[in-house]
Image (cartoon, rainbow, N blue to C red; front, top):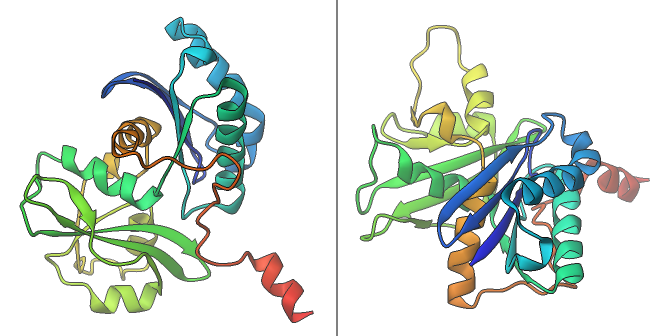
Length: 237
């Protein structure tokens, strides 16, 4: 199953091609999320050309649906929907925090153990975090353990235990809030695993297709979790 993965939920982004679980190639996008709209199509074209693949050969496009950057998610999802419409391929939406948790399986220092807990965090700004809680299944997969939520940085730091396994780009934000020299109230996974990757989005997309969990081309929405600051200000006015 030839699958295209698109991940644009943050300031950096990636696109990848995967074939039945084998990652063929992954390309980094601009680290400025505002440029995703300018570079995404060009990078997808380059990816296909490098692999000698035509868009019509791609059977599935999987895209990160959030939570994350409003602009980045919108650009990625519009691109994925347009690609699926133009080529007739299947479309799958993948939760961004689930993709971050899935990457934690590759951590050799903290191999997953059945029943263990993991939390994936993304900076939600305004002094808040998007938080996804996961539990390791008997098969070694990280599965959601609670609904995704928004919590303040202060609340999150006050309720963590040193044994809590933590991953995601929000870890950097949390660490910046700790007093110099203060012990971390959590155990972080390696930084190389913090950011969601298009390769993970693609492999999770293949699993979703096998389960029959396809997205509707016309209605796949971003998972913002809350309204934008501009919308909230408009309501106040």
